[in-house]
Image (cartoon, helix red, strand yellow):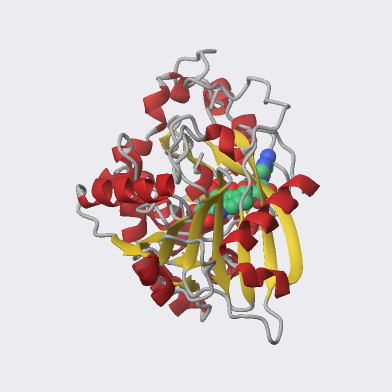
Length: 405
Ligand SMILES: Cc1cc2nc3c(=O)[nH]c(=O)nc-3n(C[C@H](O)[C@H](O)[C@H](O)COP(=O)(O)OP(=O)(O)OC[C@H]3O[C@@H](n4cnc5c(N)ncnc54)[C@H](O)[C@@H]3O)c2cc1C
């Protein structure tokens, strides 16, 4: 039986492990703290369309392909585990001022040009859909983009992987070459560059809140609500018991401390959009490291003749789980998935194949010390936190790092 080692048991690694085990591989996940990373912290939006922006055609194409795979993937996972995943069926992006409203029109026109019909709403239309939103909301953009409960997803993936025979090894991996397996999938999230020098994946910190509904409080919105408040991106994702409020974004290295300023801004901004949150119980504040890439597309592909990358998913890792798993399965079979080809690590240069530990161990491909991509992971992280707003070149719901997850 062919053996596969999956390094990292976040949503990406778990999904790959589950699917590979069902496809006949003997799979071990290596992770000292399985499901402890960004996947546990995330919001769960699956929203590539309402993040569409002119010039980002490849990101939109990849995201739309990822979204299209969710219904089948979720049905299969829920059939195996009995765990439902979806918490919302639509996403409503709202505008608080004229500039935001103009951005919504830009997004609607851009996505329509690529075959996706999003619906612009006026003030009354927004209120018809979500009565609890602030009266200052003046327009909206409605998209058929669902959301999932990320923690239900992790729980379901762990259960499905276990049922399929996946083993878990709780040792931290320091050297991919030391792994005893025919093939290796590198899915260590933001830590991936530590295992493959030069891989252009860096940590992008995000803080997020979980608020619980209390008796008598207004019900949570039924859709994902996205907005921009005082120049900061905000989203509210419904949960069975309340709302998830996200998220900040900083270039802060591997720092998962929750800051007072981050919590303060998220609460103030959420209240500006959905005033009733003041009546909710403050249940949790957490922070995680998104595995950022230089161009907002992940790195899914061959690193050398043994190692595959499935990392760098940035703010859309939940969205990309089904497509990533399918793409890795195809690669393990010596095939490739056309929709995932834009994510080939080769786009950052041949060094992606040449500089990794397997090469060092086996010498099967020529070695190179060239960093891969514009932002080599070996570069020191920015110590000074850079708030989300600094990323935003004037466009309300866009950032140069691709969305607000
Ligand atoms: C605040 C926040 C909100 C987000 N919201 C959304 C959203 O709404 N929608 C969306 O699509 N995405 C969202 N994301 C992004 C998404 O969470 C990530 O892209 C995704 O979780 C990445 O999954 P992963 O499995 O690659 O990484 P992770 O979940 O971080 O898992 C990596 C795993 O690797 C393990 N690991 C690390 N080093 C080693 C090692 N040396 N040896 C073995 N194991 C190792 C870790 O223990 C961890 O379990 C959000 C992220 C954050 C932080």
